[in-house]
Image (cartoon, rainbow, N blue to C red):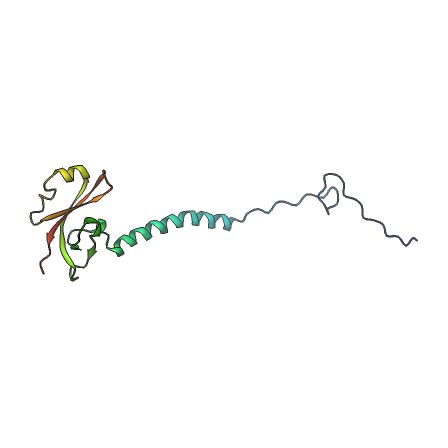
Length: 144
């Protein structure tokens, strides 16, 4: 017997380090099905949350684009400052008598009154993309 230890056999060419020759190569880790489902749900849920949050913000912030017949708005120096409030609010000045949808801004500016269908309306407010189509709120003074 000899005091020398036998060195381990060198791996053969093409065999992964630390594996004997002829042993099958380990398979790459496959993503689990749950992980894929989670990614799909995230791709769907995030846009939905963003859209719902945006709509909720419009309602909570008093954005007049969500105003409907019977809603009230504050008196404002400009259309950009208009805000929907409760009709019992001390700052409420206008009540929405009706809404005319899909009016071009140029047509609204050219007409004297887009609200002929609402005889109690004394003012109107166009809302939409500059130069495009929008909606007109026909406003009557709020009787307190």
